[in-house]
Image 1 (spheres, rainbow, N blue to C red):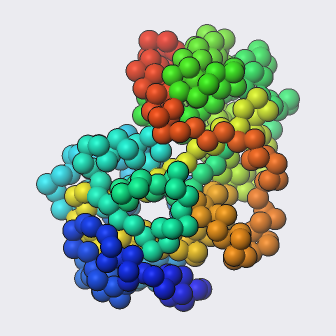
Image 2: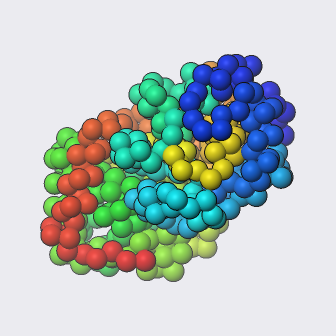
Length: 368
């Protein structure tokens, strides 16, 4: 376990520079104030997503006086924002302190006044294009869209989105979320559109909807929210999801059934998630302390252990703090070298097309 050196020596100056309610004057005061609050309320953080299990355990070991209250682990990004809206005047256990949402939802939350600014002490090592300049939201990790395939049920593993339209995959293909609300599912549709040559943005949304219309009409699309359970049970033998979730599922199932993870050959879409603190956080100091932990070396390595590329990955590698055995567990670097990182504007344009057009174009009601 690392000591308090996980925070940079500039912690005090960084904290003093930020705005926000109940701001502590030093790391020690922040810790004391967070302990006094005694609780941190999170939302939409499944413990098997990006190794949040390790993250929760690490934070709890460091701050045992702070109870972690976990709300709705399977909530979508849209539902996270709705939880803030619904609890503006509620300081009880149903009001989230922090959110972890898709990139497009960060600017939306800022525009609505749902989040507050805070810059962690490692702020300068977060890439400029992955954070709001005023500190309202900041990238935390990224991955690429992939297929998780149950090879007990699928003989010929699909290698591309184009393959998914083949008759042999009838009743097999699902998204890991509802494309009307889930960031992961929305970007899964976006990837399908880009695989057809569409540029990221409105064009990828339109092409992605057309792809899923064809997939649904062919009988290949399964309109349920897929996960490790449906993959293992055979309800959704082919699941379109982030590579880190697919790799984690493969490890968890441990060959029962065997799972192959494929980065499709016709597109490598990278997606960034972002963190933010609710503007109405009942425990603002605990929320800030949680952010300090997430963006420390220790926290970033927890995400990497869950196959998520932490936003400070380049900084960690350059300083030689990533254990070699952890690097050896990751997919080959070439799988990521052709990755496309859409801009916030492109993601927003794509999202609007998909969310508003799914029912009319695809007509498949995706359910839990």
